[in-house]
Structure formats: structure tokens, C-alpha cells
Image (cartoon, rainbow, N blue to C red; front, top):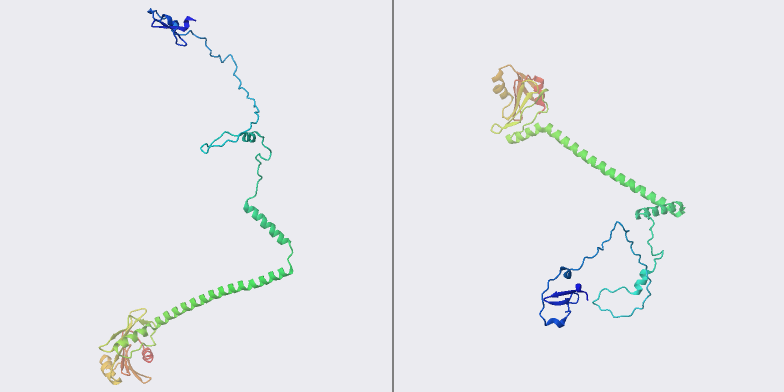
Length: 317
């Protein structure tokens, strides 16, 4: 046995590979400790097995030849429900190893039209077929009757719409005309209304004269005095400072009493007497006084009224 494979420990020699004693017979003898060489413990150096890649070629991959294995018969074995996976059977291997036919390969699907485009094409074809198909006599008659019945309905609707619009315009115009007329009449009769209200408050039968001298208009509201039972209307010139007051008051005087108590006290004998329609009118310096049916009428102011204008005022009441 080679000594390089024997190891001495505590005087005993052991095989380095098996670990058994080499000479068990000498176990009883005392062992002498000998120095151990390093060569006996360490193995000898080995030659490098590293390949020099620069000097050799790259190894090629081994080609694995497909070995067709014979189909083995399988046995029907009861499989446990706890096992979820099994090795593929021979039938599955046969299916996988069989080449694919042309029908099993992926076939390119041809381009198709959009559903909306398809419907439009079908509708166009139907319309073309209907247009090309000749109409029967009954269809022509029915179409003519339907057109004749539809036309009057449209006209009636248009006429009804026009009538409603014209009626609305007529009613609106009438309402506007009534409002304008009412406003105009109220504006014209405002003095009459004011005098009527004042007369009812004063308790006399006062009136607004229908004649007014040119260039004069009512100035301010109509006033009344219930203690004197009188109503006063003020007139003023549209241009200038001329104005006069027309007063109506309850009185028991006659024409002679008016002359003595009013006219002669103011102007003496400087007055003009006018007889019109049973009235005796005394005029002086643009002023006047007369009495009729228990109402005393007086005109006072600085307006240069003529005798004719005073007569027309008196007769317009």
C-alpha cells in the first residue's frame, strides 16, 4: 500500500481513504511519535485543467435527434381526487405530435363593411328596386288621393295660423286705440271733471265754460269754498303775464242788485251792458259780472278781454 495514503496519528497508522488501522497487531506496543511530513498530509499539486479559450474553438451545441418512441399502452388506473395534475397520456402526446393541417392554421379574415354602411347600401338598393319597379294603377290613384288630402290640411293650418295672428293684432290694436282715446278724452275732460268734483263739494251747480279765449289755458287746480258755496277757475295766458279768474257762487241777487253792489262800486258808470239770451251782462275794463238761475258769475283780472269774448264765455255755460 502506498505510504502517501497512510496517516500516523498518536503512533497509530491509518489509511487516509478508509480511516482503518493498517497494523492492528501493534496496537499494544507503545507508539513512538514521529514527525509528520507535510507531503503526507497534503496531496500533490495537480496539473491545471483550465482550457485556453483563445486556442480552441467554441463548442457547438449538440443536436438532439428526435427519437420516435413507440406508443406504449396505458393502463386504466383509478386517480385520486386529491391529485390535480397528471403527466400527459400517450393520446395527448399523439395529438401534440400530429402536424397541423391547413384548416387548423390561422386564416386572415377579409375586410367587412361597417354596419351603418351595410344598412345604407341595403336601403339604397331597395330604393333603386322600388324606383325601377313600375307603379300599378291603384298605387298611382292612392298616391294622388293622399297628396290631394294632405294639401288642404297644410293650407288650413297656415290659414288658421294667419287668422290667429291677424285676430291677435286686431285685438291689440283695438286695446291700444281704446287706451289712447280714453287718455285723450280724460285729458280734454279733466277740467270738466275737476269742476264737477269741486261743485259737488261746494254744493252748487257750477260748470266749465265750453268757450275759452284763444291763448289762455287753465292754470292750477279748480278750487272751491264750501262756506261761500263757490267754485273758482284760474286762467293764464300761454305767453305773457295776463290772467283772469272765473268765479261761480250761489246768490239771491238779480241783475239790478249786481249792478248796484258790484259794478257801480268798482267803476261807477264806466260799464257796458249787453243783453244776450235773456242774460244781462255788465262788462268793464276786461272784467264782467252777471247772474243766472241763482248763480253769480264774475270775471276779474288783468286780461284784456273784449265784450264779445265775455259774451261768448257767458253763453257757453
